[in-house]
Image (cartoon, rainbow, N blue to C red):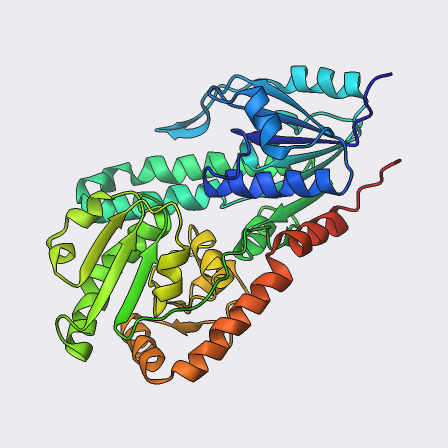
Length: 392
């Protein structure tokens, strides 16, 4: 007798816990469904994935994996969007063969591949909206090279095409789940109703062992959009204000993550900066840091590092824009927030002078993480929202 599948999950690239942020989220969601007793067919598009490794990473007999070759898909290119993935027919045949009636697509590339398949209930989870990241990446590239201004009409047209992809694809889904609160209003402008849900993340909580010296931490994907914004502000605005406030040599700013060209700027050569490179285990650094600083003003590309800080009991000092993606960040309750660099440096001074208050803020942030972003409650809220009608 053939194995009965309750659910098909599809993603671009293979979900592995120790890879990028999106893949980590996919992994936790899939693992959640497996632990709840679902039988899952997992389909992914990946040139490098090994079926045995993917299956073994979940350690479940209720999982089967189908890997299709990855081809460039949904990539802006001057006056067009490159879309080479075309597995809809094969996926539809696979679903019929397995008699699967429920499907979850993780992000827009996977969603496009199944949007026209009928006779199944389709749900989609979205990360940052591609037309937003496309625009903001261009904006920060423009800051480095004003000659790129001549490309603005390409960007406008690309984003028009990208919006149409989202609009035409997502209207075919039963439920749209977004990982950033700000995406709800963005999609509503396209006539698409969506629901923000916190996504499952690892708990990094441990013993806090703060140093007597002011230790400020910035970490993440340093090539990413959130870092492009933050590193400029950190070097050009925050650092001079910290020197004026605390004096040279009286604080440190640790930067963890794959090295970025932005770090070649002369300001990062000052002795107060410690460039750590990629750090596999952040627990030790987080536990000793006075705060995580995130001064970026871009409303996308800034969630995972902040959720990691919440899960580690590290004090978050961030720009107000972070609330647009994560509504659980509340000034003086779960974080210290400011509208500009002057306010953020004042928040750092507040943290130095008010350790007992900040201890309460760190703990409240951690409790908020456990309530919404830890794996079980985040998985439960997802399952409750999509209301799968399954016949066990």
